[in-house]
Length: 440
View (tube, rainbow, N blue to C red):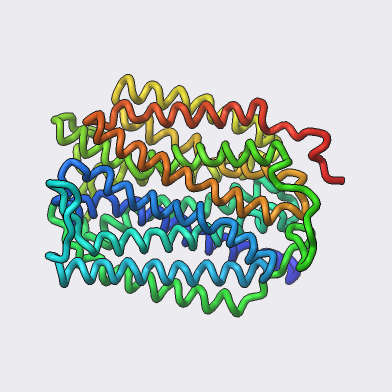
């Protein structure tokens, strides 16, 4: 490997590794929903599902409110300084998580009533604030990662391939996170016996790790990329919303992240419902997963395989340089729709898990189709695009509320079907660029 190639790979590898951290911590946040439901929310009455999904809601609220902040920072400070600010928000979020666990451990009686029968600990409210800070950090970092990777010149690669490579590494984080929560945080004990104080050491460890990554990143050379952001003082002539394919792409990503996150966050709650009603879920003929004396649980396996599908699919997609993003999106959304409908009719959770494989390349496809030809509008577009990730909050919360209303998670997966149809419509019609939207 030549020195020049090494110099080109190092910034790309650094940005990709930071994106791995984002994927890992995003899924850690989701996987804490079920444990917190049995600890902090043990006395939440019939609002348990709704309050549980508030973790995902406030995480993605950070995307909605701060995605455009990230794009402004990119224009003002550049890519490297913006990603350092994003890492600082991760440290703040993890520190808030640690404080929440400490207060929940030291002051378990510090609660407040909601309605006539629900009692919520103040520690849970602090944890929700930490979730918002973590979502803010993820939004700011993704505002950097997506346009940087898509525009970064790496010989022999296309934008959608580079995005698939980076998101595949991100998927290693999302795949490993469920077992990190189960094995490291909670030592593989049954979920009903989990104690909130078990979070203290893992969060302290993660804080130290991210501080180290932030320090090392500050010392590395991460070059800026020309013609992807407005120069200081430059006024853009058009509204970003005047680009039709961009506007429709933002809508598509809103629905994509909505169903992507809802499945990953809520499938384990659906599994608990099925098992609690006397319908055991088996894997290779077994109803539990025991490794080294630790009961890892089917619920952790479901989430791990779902996010693992992203890893496998993105790794495969990174080699599909000759298949257009539009063709990939049409194919995957059609199959995902069929899987979701069949999963509801047959109550087969493994079909929902399989959708992860189909979802794997959708982000890269929608993003590359959405920013195509935007040039100096790219960084501004990326900020708005990232704000649309708020769909992960909306649909997760709606699904949790529907589960409480209907008394079951089964038919709530109609939301997934609806989201897939919206994305399919974008692939078929909305992704075409009008002549007047071409920047010459």
